[in-house]
Length: 312
Image 1 (cartoon, rainbow, N blue to C red):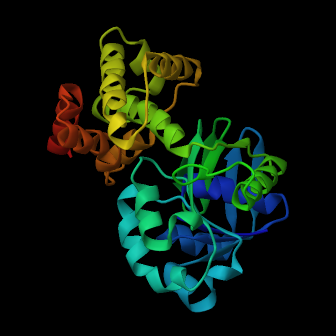
Image 2 (cartoon, one colour; image 1 turned 30 degrees about the vertical axis):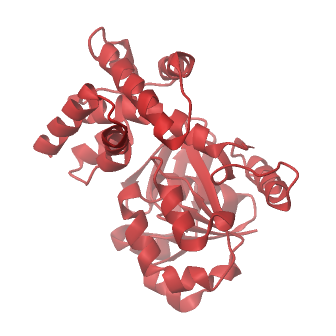
């Protein structure tokens, strides 16, 4: 298959490297010094189960527009930060609309898929999430990743039928990922899975950026651990605005998962340490916006959001 990985940072490079190592054609879209090194020296990805050091096809966004048609790819994977989604869709409107290639979002938050579907239609929009993976650019052209690095994906906003042609194609894609060493599964209800991931992301990412603590340090701390749970409770309460039902069992499961993970720095903490923009609006902000819409009180989310904005 032929894949276009847009946003070839830590996560995008890891999955792209896995696919290329399995024999698929992958085009990586990057920028700056990271792009230059990838073009001249190739890409290095280090993971406990993958040591990748090969030449790759790496291009800028302008080169994508000049050299490729969207329908030359079987799948477009979006791996950049959620705050860039709308601007990317606007810039790529004509290029995307001239094709029928599906787009799979592997981004944080619950607002990317609605934006993509509004631009290219729900039929071409695949919701997705990268689960239990940490990935960061350690130097231009070099990426370090850890964790099982699972992908969960499904039709947006949910499958009309598991017997449809589109769902069968997703199951075939799922097999491609698994054969490439990427644990993956297809779900008929991706909206539920995205909100379940937001429980974890919103529970620990903003607090980790504030405190400098790893995920395990947060959940096992007698004080911050209570705040993690409260952030999750508030997230579960506003999920109903999107028609998603979450309860204490979901929260308990996510807390247990965090306790079983290796202690990792969240992506928001890494971005905060590097002085980069945070995905705060895509994670914590998504909860607050829906709370405002439904008149739900979210005091801990508001406090954390305000503190990060002030420090930022």
